[in-house]
Image 1 (tube, rainbow, N blue to C red):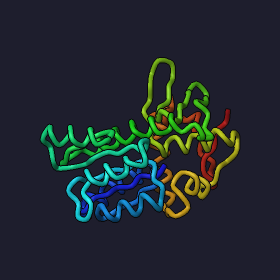
Image 2 (cartoon, rainbow, N blue to C red):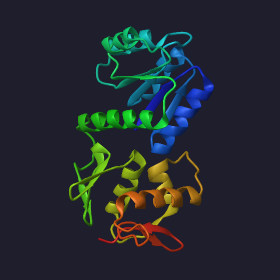
Image 3 (cartoon, one colour):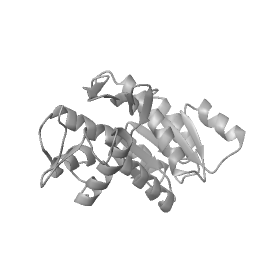
Image 4 (cartoon, one colour):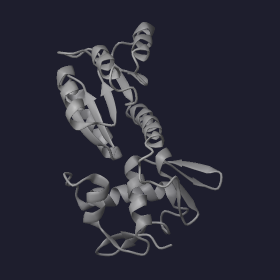
Length: 228
C-alpha cells in the first residue's frame, strides 16, 4: 500500500516516511503542494498525508482539487494549525482525519492503520481472503488484526505480509531474501538483523510462548517457516 507524504519541513517529512516505511508501507515524499499534486497524478497512491501550510499549493487547496475528481482516496491533514475552525474546515473539504503537530509516533501509526483498514475493505479487487488461520490464530489482513479466542492482537501491515507469506507456503523454509522482496520491497535493502528483530517482536505478539515458537519457526541457515 502506497502513502504520499506532503510536508515542506524535511525533518518532519523524513520522520513520517521512516515511521510508515517501518510499518510496511511504500512511502513517497513531496516537498510542497505542487510536488504532491504531480506525484499524486503520476504515482497513484492509496493514502495522502498532507501538511496545510505548504509552498505552491497549500493543503486545503490541494485537498479541494483532488476531491473534485477523486472522492475515495483517504486524506489525512497533519498540521500545526490546531484551532477548531481549522479542523472543521479540513474535514468539510473532504479530509478523513486531522492530526495536530506535535504528534506522537503511535498516534500517527494508529490513525494510518485505521485508514488502511477502510481502504482494504473497500478494495473489492484485492486478492486477499477475509481471514486465514495459523494454528489457533486467526488473521484478518484487511483489519490489520489477529484473534486468538476472545483476544484481539493489533499487527502492522508488514506483520500481515510476513504471516501471509508463511501461510501461503506451509512447511517450506522461506529464504530471507524472499521475505525482504515480499515484505519490504525490491528497492529496500535491510540486513538480516532487521528481519530477525522484526520476527522477534512479532513472535512476542502472536506466539503463546515466544521462546518456543510454533507459528514462526526458525529454519537454520535459510530463514523461517510455518508448519501447520
